[in-house]
Length: 229
Image 1 (cartoon, rainbow, N blue to C red):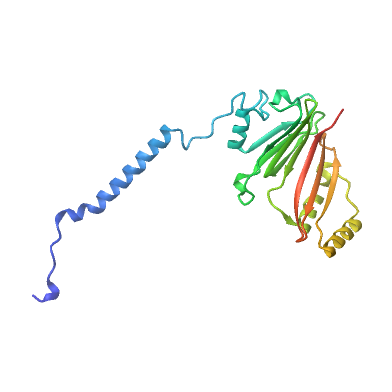
Image 2 (cartoon, one colour):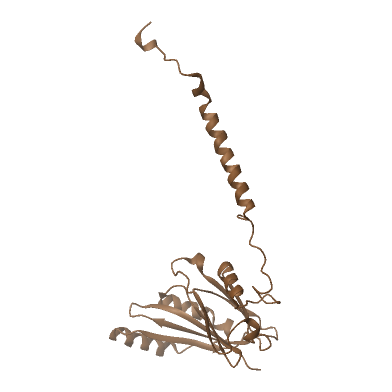
């Protein structure tokens, strides 16, 4: 027998080692799953209770309601005159309640704002936003502002607003005058802004304002107000 034919005898228990490791790994997964289930982790978020939302499932701005908004990332407001009462929603009679801003670099942290324009089949609108400001006066909601999560190039913002002309009932701005204003501001190295609206096709007044830096990037803000009927 040559030296190359010599085989070392391994201890018998080494043959069981891979199987034992596998068994331990499976046991760890089972235990972790049981712990998560016991603590409610991994289950769907429970439905909101009255107090976290109103009886009609609109957002409440009480302490519990704001905590629920932060968990769900949903803000739902009925701007119909019969439902815009500040006290009923946990809002001050006068002032502004701000939600956010969220991290602009994290789209998963955006808020989803749903606004109802009132009766007569007007329907509503949905905005993806990093911040929501709800302003009240004389005990009623007077304005809801939604700020976009991040700035976009001028042309992209302009095209996005053009696509919403029919939805919100806006009149298209004078493009020649708009481009002249942008060119003058750019040449001077000054920021500029322009607006679309207001339009009330959805039963609420919607205005969009683009605030633009000298770099040509613009941040959109939507201002929505109830319509007095």
